[in-house]
Structure formats: C-alpha cells, structure tokens
Image (cartoon, rainbow, N blue to C red; front, top):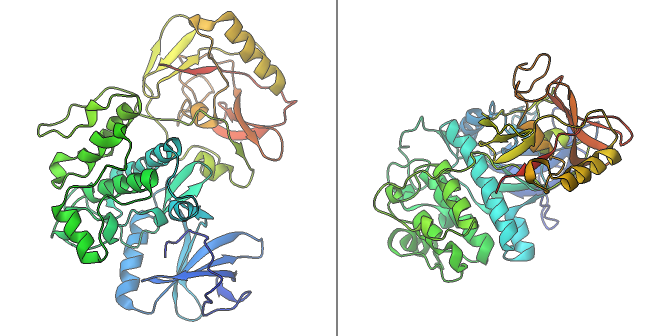
Length: 450
C-alpha cells in the first residue's frame, strides 16, 4: 500500500483502534490498508494535523529494505516527492514511518473516472516526469512507478512510496523482477537495469490515463511478462498523435528509447505542439531539440494558508526549495526574455505600489497600449515569479537579477489565497507570502513567448 494516500477502506479494520496512540503523539484516525511491507493508517496529533503512518511488518529483511529506500530520499527536498516527517520505533517495538498524507492518487482517480481527458492526462504526465527528473538528479531508481504511487495535490503530482527505491550512481542495479508487473520494463527482468525502468513505467501510466487500458495485456502475471518481453504494444486505443511517442517509449531495447528524462520531456512537448514525426523511434541518436528547460504553471490557483509551502515548493523559511538557472536576453524594448522558461517579462513594472484591483486594471491598460507590440500580458503565477528569485542578493538588496528594475521590492501574482488576499513574491527577502487586496504592491507583467 502506498504511503501518503488517503483512500480509506471501511470494510477492513487494523490492529489498532481509533484514538489509540500509535507513534509519538499521533493517534489512529482511520485504517487504510495493508501491503507487502506493512499496514498504513491515517493518524493525527493534538494539533489536529493528519499524517499517513506506515507500521512495518516484524520482518527484519523487509524493515531493512524499507528503511534503505527511505534513507535514500529523506534529505531530498522537493515539492515533487511525498515527504517523510519522521520514523522510528513505537512502544510496541514496530518500525513506523510518518509521512505527508494526500487524499487522492492517479489510481483512485482512474477508478472513479476511467480514462482522463487528454489535457489533464498530459499535464499529469509532465508532472510525473518532473518528479522523475528530481530522482534522476540524485541517481535514484524508484522501481515502482504506478498510478497508486502518484499522488494528486491540486494540479501537482507527487511521487510516493519509496520502499523499492535505490541509489544507482548512474550505474546498472544488480537486481531483477522488482516492481509491479504491469508497469515493469523488459530490462527489469534481467540482472541489471537503470532508471530506464522508471521512464518506461511513466509511459505506461500515460497510456493508462489516456485509454483506461494497458499496452501489454494478460490474464496472469506470466502472461503479462511474456507480452512485455516479447510482444509489441497494442497502441490502437491511443489517439494518433501519440503513436510515435509510445512506439519509442516502449521499445524493448532501452538504448532505443529516450536517454534521460529531459529528452523524454522535450520529445513530448514537441508532440503536444503538433510535431508528430519527432517521436518516431530511430536507430541513431536523437538530437536534443531546443526549447524551454522549465515548464511553469500559468493558470491561477486558489491556495490555502495551510498548503501554500507544499503547493509552491517552499522551505520552512518560505524560500524556494529549488532555484532555476535563467537565460535572460535584454531585447531593449522594456522587456526581458528568459529562454530557460520561455517567458517574456516586463523589465520594470508599475511606477508605484498599487492595490490588487488596480493591478488588474494596470494589466488591461498595458495590453491596450501593447507593450513591446504584444497584447497578451498578464499577472504571473507564483511559480513564474519564483523563477526570478535568486538564491543570493544580486540587485542591490534584492534577490533578483540586476537586469530588472530594482524599485520593485514586491510583486502581485495571479494566485489568490483561499482565506482572502493574493499571494506575492518579496524580492527584498526572496520569499513568498500574501497580502490583503487593499495592500499596495507592484506589478511585473509576463507573457508566454510563442
């Protein structure tokens, strides 16, 4: 059972009763389910915070395997991964792992809806790849990418359940037959394999989201394994635009697939833009295609005070968990283009601090005048504004590149706070916070380059 999920089964009862203290000061709230490594509960402490708690089986080998995976990822701070709060032994001598809990995963969503619409499936797929990119950077193979381990927090997908995760240092892993059969790559049945197995599994999840079917079918695990190793995927149910992409992702030989997550993401973006030929499988190396390195959310969200650090990817000090490497070009027309994100920014901003209503009026007036010849300027989202934050002061007392006007210490975003107000970035501190609508902040407009 995947740690982090909140998918309560009312037909089962755990070993412990509701209200019983199970770990630290956390009491049982609900029993979720039991898996190969242990039982999972929803627990809460005296402050009312809900968490997921996995209570491991009393098997030394299983405990060692589970804790090896947890220790491999526990110090990686990323909004793309389900985080582990604590672990240790409870008063019953059981090893426990306390984790973030999330109400829904892709598996439970597919059970309710069947196949997803293309836009949502494609968005979730790119979110999955963003998470795998973090794991690749740390040389980690998850080994069990599947819908039940992909958790949905608003529009963010967080990868969870690291029971089988292992550090590889870029080398093949000397194990085989590990994972969930339907999502395993052919090389997973061999003695050595790499992070290619996670990329394969992600493609299978995309296939499932688009069709509510699997590319390799069978009534038994041996039949599914035979199809994965020996048969071509049945892609007839997938929309034509994705055929070439799946043909490449599901090649038996991992050397004929994408060499890394970045190549996979670049390829998929081209498919979404309508270039169907780029994903056709090739025997020769595929050239790296030019395009933005980072895809940032552009649609506004309503975000609560409780979840804003998780949603926006912030540490305890409200600073970004991850900083990006910008590639600015000064176009000498009052704008800057960041080729790393594909965004065009207003170099300065409003000439004075204005309230939130005036900020939206300012954008409308900017479009009426056509700054730099464009009329599709808008308020940026928090992820877009965060892409401008520098880890150290670079522009006087501001955490922003000196190419930007240094008068704008704080800027409104299009993301609003569920309790009222709007989220903003304070470049004077390099943090994200919120302000009331009647507060006075600056506006720095943005648009997406075509």
